[in-house]
Image (cartoon, rainbow, N blue to C red):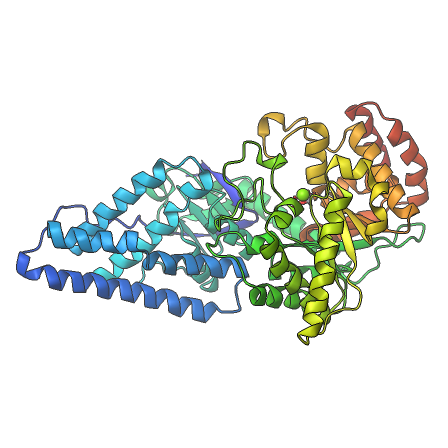
Length: 573
Ligand code: PEP
Ligand code: MG
């Protein structure tokens, strides 16, 4: 009989396959003690299991070396770190020694103790780290009982379980699993991030799935809507197939555009750059025929770790990014930590009342000169390997650009004296995302070579509407007369001074807004590579002269409705 479950879509894509149900890994519940004479043996048994789990993790890391994006490798490292965590291990030893608990029961007691700590946390991200801990404890427990690893995904199957660890995901995909449904978990978890990066459909928080679905049931999983259909009816199968066909046709059509020019109907070439956060994105940008990288967000190197990346590590990543784009320009943005991108290294302040207006972006870099210099040296060194450009985030005043320029000049002399090959000219750009910088652009435009408009932040600061606060989600919209006027002003001021101007906020990747941006005078877009071809297709259907002409009307719009009407009209052939 057809049944439906509804969870949260955590990784888009549809899958059809047979269910493989994995029951939750239950830790030994019964209290069990060992005689005093067996305590040492029990401790050894525990340590052997921890070593075996560590070895397994190490082996997996080695096997997947180079096959995983940087951030995914970090999940595995995190699990390895947990296995060395004194809090976890000494606590266990202590319980066995003083209480004479069996290793399995001690594991259970320790797990529950730590779970209480995690449950009390308010931060959803930190809370979801309990999944990692559970996975690690589960592996130790499995080795205590010398059980073989308990996840055996199979080709064409959909795993149904209570929760999934990131390291398991990587294994499952290589075993051919086509989708995953969990009863718990969150779309913020590392597993969800990894599933998205692996393009593996994932639905989380679908209550009751592992209790009610049986091995071999046929499932349709929609990782976008979060719907899981069990034993689909003929109509469900028809819909599923129609959807796949539609997606495949669209992908085929889009695929043809990879090597096509991004040229409007009236023959004007538009530049499409890519935004990237990982080496995966760089590879995708290259494959989609991006004209270069318009925004490489370096702060992602600083997240999910306890120590700052040193110059050598940063240099290698920036160099590989430059090499990865094989001669096309690569725009590396200096650290934009702060606000919602808080790190664990102690670099960002945790006590700010209003972090979005606090020490973030270039302000943080200038307040931490050593950290800034390490990064600037790494970027300068990478400039010897390809056309690297440097982009400064959160600029609000001329002095900030001057300060960065001064540091760069001093570091360049230093690096050359050390024998490094660096570019003769490193183009410097400013992010225009603070209204003050947009309004007073003329006051510092002589100091920059190019501009990149960060509409994600510009909209929030201009409209006083937090980009992460759902309560003001309606207000947080680029379709506001003030936003359009400011965009047009920045674009025209920049171009009038002979500077290139791109938009790198999310609106650049939304094909519905492409005609509007063209109408405002934009000629460079920087967007996530996943939507690059859709935007290219839209641009190829646009008559630029017509859009520019009617763009004047757009600037006279007095409300959102009129702007939306303009967009709808522009979309008509
Ligand atoms: C922006 O603000 O538009 C931008 C591209 O930067 P981020 O989203 O990283 O703040
Ligand atoms: Mg920003």
